[in-house]
Amino acid sequence: MTTTPTTTLWRPTGPTELALVAESGWRAWPPRLPEQPIFYPVLNEDYAIKIARDWNVKHSGRGFVTRFEVESSFLSRYPVQRAGGETILELWVPAEELADFNGHIVGLIEVIHEFR
Image (tube, rainbow, N blue to C red; front, side):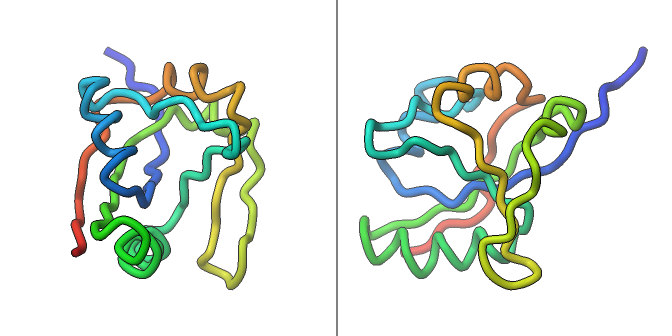
């Protein structure tokens, strides 16, 4: 049996988006809203915690950090973007590519932190 190498990604999210992930069976991210042309998974758990705790809680009362695996070979099409300091790293996935991105998630999306 061969296994495909994967990369761990994190996504800070609020309760509305998380409910849609749950509806997918924890296997996919929902389509972006018109004002959200990019899907931003992050490459650092600490960065995801900061966003969930400091931004999601402020805006929706709760913040969550999710973790999931994506085929590494697929992710090579998205250059790592530095959104600030050395550890503030993201991938910028265009909204129109999100269904394809979801097809390369390996396993389930899991909630690893919750903030109120």
